[in-house]
Amino acid sequence: MLNKITSGLRWRYELYLSEYIDLFGSVSYFVQFGLAWFKNRHSATVIYVFANKRNVGDYLSHQGVQQIVNIPGPMMLCTPVGQKLYHYQLSYLRQHNPSCHVVIGGGGLLQGVFSDFWQALVDSKLSYSLVGVGVNRMPGRPELAPELLHAIFTHATALGLRDPMTVELVQPECQSKVRLHTCPAHNFVVEYINRVTIKVKPALLHMLHEADLRLAKVDIDALKDHVQSLAHKHGLTYVESNNMHNDFSTAIAQVASSQVVVSSRLHGCIMSYATGRPCIGIACDEKLSQYIQTHTQLLCVQPNDGLLDNLAMAVDKVMQGPTQQITTAQLTNSQAVGQAINEHIS
Image 1 (tube, rainbow, N blue to C red):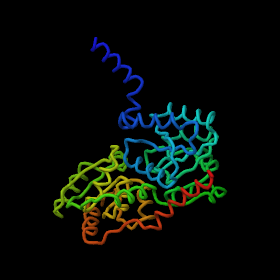
Image 2 (image 1 turned 90 degrees about the vertical axis):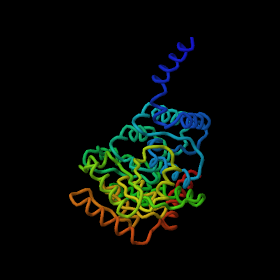
Image 3 (image 1 turned 135 degrees about the vertical axis):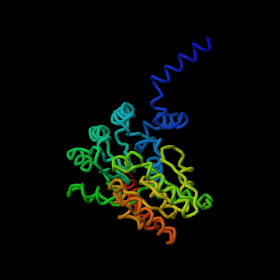
Image 4 (image 1 turned 90 degrees about the horizontal axis):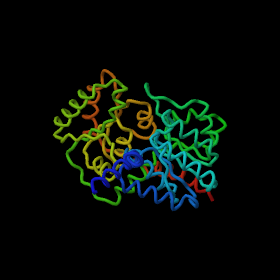
């Protein structure tokens, strides 16, 4: 009898819940998400949208957006895996809570993989703003159709954008809505590390975005071996992470406790700059190089034939140079986007 009950529960879980549990990263967060939605769907002033709970970088950006807007509200995930769910949520809001304001960000959400979400949002006629959002532009990744991008900018209330590459795509008549600012994850990380004590260890953290490295035709095994040898050269322990988990406290502590960080992931660079740790970015795509050039003075190397040699010189340089950290002015600039959204809502 017990086996029969267990078997029945298992196939129902696999059929109806497994993809969502995987999407949310844990059963507890899935329950938290559901309870927040059903409790607040009728009355929420703000609905927060981000991509994926299982990517700690996306989740940090979402936490930062919530912090600077500072209005409680339920969440929506715009990843294609959650397509049925966000279509239901948008439809429900349009019918039962049409005055709510949808806040999207941060992250590289202006890319082709999210086309269905953006079209559904524009079609919903709900008011919305972008915070810390940008494009992802690199060979092999689909881009949003120009007409959809135009519609997104046209109907948005505020456009908080993370880099000049994205700002340049905004049509002239919408430029007055634009504020160029750093990713809101900085705000969250800075506030978090001010509440905890983290001791720096003799470690080199290598944070990898293997999909982007492959698209950039980097030999990943050779890169790992080389970075490991650089760690040993400088008497550091080699630590490796892909950032694909949902424990933001571990991710922040891992970066903040490292003596130096090498990252092909944007949020590896963001956490480094927020915590004041030396970092070298490997710019497999324009979003990472745009971030470094626009908002920081971090070192950046290109994934070309000179990658390994240039990376060795960069590590030598940051080991000898002063650290740098995000400024109060940069954090305040991001907070201004949240204030603009609050003014619209009030």
